[in-house]
Every structure is written in structure tokens, then in C-alpha cells.
Length: 329
Image (tube, rainbow, N blue to C red):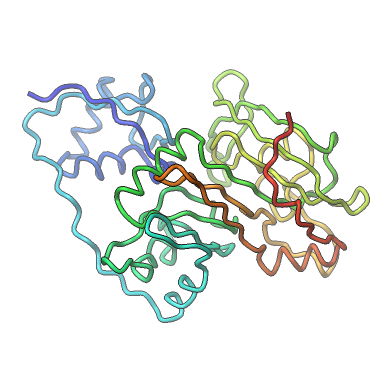
């Protein structure tokens, strides 16, 4: 007879609805039965009661009750995805680093990592174009927001996917972001520590500061350059992995929204000037990835055209030491 299982949510599953998580893990379970298990408190997340639409976060633990003689989950049949010649060329040109364990690409701003409602073009749908010589399809091990550009890590094999997922979960992977902000933070370097909670709203789900129910979110930051008090180029290193963490931190803790971030900065997130793009100016600049052999690799990605144009317009010049990770203490 089956027993209670506690299953930890992995990085690629971050943000997935609980009912879809169950469908992926237990495709034989009827939705009505899942609803009953949740209603009676037999399915829980981190010990709390949940609903089918609950969004999961990396590291959360899902309680799965005994499911009796339910058919064993069958591995999903591989989908045949048609990829345009344009997308094949674009995803292959985006590769920054590749070895037997990992592939790192420079994800364009505006390209989603995974599909969803109304999203048919995404990185996950292009991964067949990056298959290895052994025929293995690369696997997503973390995500970036659709409008955030920069380094995105893929696993070249199942073994590597397990290793990388654990490294992201334990924060062994270091990530450095660049952000163009409206205004200049004060002080010009420091640590932000706020508790964030997902909250539904008219404009879709968003993160809010909640000192009681929120989950701790910590970021380091440093001003790299500034244009008077008008704007600043920041380096940011998230020490936790909450949704929209850097975007919320800059608005709520420092009062300096990211340029183009209307979701959190509203109308104050836009600078006047023909040379300033209205797109989001948040870029995953560098990443340090621990390898299975104990060594590590650093990979950096150039900023996209709209970001570079804004930097040029404001007179910012990128220096070599801007790529250093932030050890502020």
C-alpha cells in the first residue's frame, strides 16, 4: 500500500499551478479526486491547506497522501514541435557556452522561457534545435521573466539537470543582474531584506511586501554609474529566488524603479528622452555555475540593443570591474 510522500518543488516548476503539478506527476488522477483531497486537507503545501490554483515556488514541499491503486505515472510522450528556420537560427546564435553538462544562452527580452495562455513562442519550444550529439533534448533548470534578458542555463542531460536543480535550490549558483533605475539609490550599496507575498490583482498576480505572511527575500546591490540624480546603473545579486524579487526591492526599499517596469513602478518607471527605450531594463548579466567535477564556470551576456541604447544616451560606459559579484560584507 502506498504511503504519504513529501515531494519538493524543483526550479523548473517554480510558478506552476498545483493542479498542473499533479497532472505532470500523477497523470492518472481525476481532477474531481484531486479537489476532494485538497478540500479535506490531505494534500498540503509546506503544511498548509491549498487550492488547485495555488502557485508553487521552488523548494516548497507538497504532501501527497496515499493514492491506493492509482496507475503508475507514465513518462509523457515526446512532443513533436515544429520550429521555424528563423527560431532555429536565433536560439543557436544565442548560445554563449556549451559543454557536456550545460548550455548557457543569452535570452532575448520579450521571449518567454515556457509556454502559457496566449504564449506560443518560447525557449522551451526551441530546445530541439540544441539537442546534443547523443540526441538528448536540453532541459530547463531555472527561469527568467519574459521581459528580462540575459543568461539562462540549460542542462545537457538528465544527470546534469539533477545536479543543477540542486545547485539552484541550495543557492550555490551565483547570479549578477544589471538594472537601469529611475533615480539613484541611497545608500549606493547595501543589502535589501524584505518579506514578499504573491497577491492577486486587476493587472494579474504581483508581489507585495508582507511582514507577517511573506517569504524572506534578500538582495545585494551596488551603484555602478549614475547620470546625476536622474538615473543609475546598478549591479544586483539575489540571495533568494522570489518572483520579481529585484523589481519589488528597488521600488519598495529604495524608491528607484527599474526603467520600463510599469507593473511595479507605474508611470514613474519611464524616463523622458528619445534615446530611452520603454522596455524593461533588467538584464541577467553573469552567472557562476558549479560543475559536477567540483569546478565552476562563469558566463556573461551582453545587454540587449534597447538597454545599450539607453546607456549610450545617458552617457554610461561599462567598466571591466562591473562584472564582479557583490561581496559587500
